Length: 202
Image 1 (spheres, helix red, strand yellow):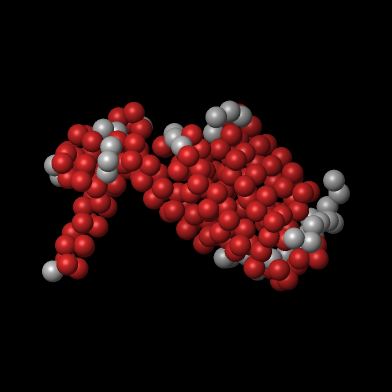
Image 2 (cartoon, rainbow, N blue to C red):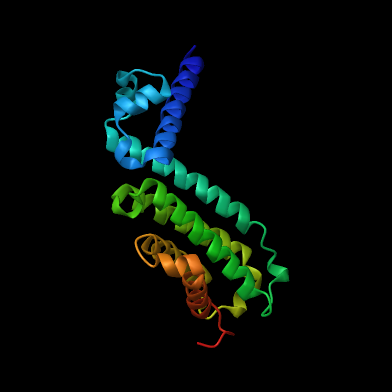
């Protein structure tokens, strides 16, 4: 019985968050209200308030879930990296592809939700994802650690990951022409590679 109630509660939260995502996609964050979400999800307003204290809490959880999904997509792309196949002739192309992919995904999320780094809890979520990404990359790239400019591989990768996230968020609030042309991504990739790798000229 307890397990069944728990499952119903989880399903209800999922319905509410999916309804929130649909409204966000159609009309943006300003259109999200507890009444609209309740109607879209097919539940009572009281049910929404049972699970979320207010509209801000609802938006925050919708965004947290969205960023978790983006992180899973990014992690899936990172697992395709074969460290043994990375050499001076391919490392820039591989890095540029990953950076461009990450910038595009972050821009899509910021455009959809519009609150990201403006919210303290979302900043915490983002920096937690950066920590996990740096941990994963440090393990994956340990075999080519001698190529890195600094001995603390994980610290360097964390700095690069946080820089990428912050500058991608910044790009969502400006530089739209450079992003569309790909110039922003190329310059960001070049900057990060020069910071990380010892065998690339400064």
